[in-house]
Image (cartoon, helix red, strand yellow):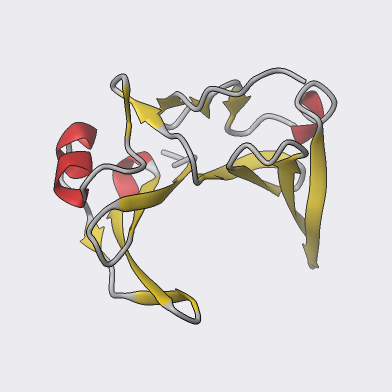
Amino acid sequence: MKDITCNWIPNKSLSVFRFGEKISKYTSTFDLEIDEVLTEGDESKSVYRPKNHCGITIYTNNYLVDSIICDDEFLYGGENLIGKLKVDAVKLVGIEPSEYGEALWVSEDEQQTTVEFDQVGLMLWVNSKDKVVSVTCDYVSD
């Protein structure tokens, strides 16, 4: 299996995973296993994770890469957003957030808030100590 370095190119890709590409292009090379399948009408949504649990989760819509969540590494501008203070991560993204979300319970004992950048398909998940703990990126159509 190849190593995955989570470099983000807004509205294009995270690492080698290009938004809008068929997931089958990546399943064997990166040893992805399907974690969950949801079918709603004509839509099929699936969740994939690398078997080595490298901290990414890939969501597909009709077998096309739709969004990716990173828990360990999310590189932008040469820096990892995960672990940064919220204020520093927002500065690094370089655009104004479209929304600061309300606190959400993500487990029985942990709340997180979101910082959303809708224009580039980016969402930072921030813990109670104001540190980014995960990042979601997706494709934004014109």
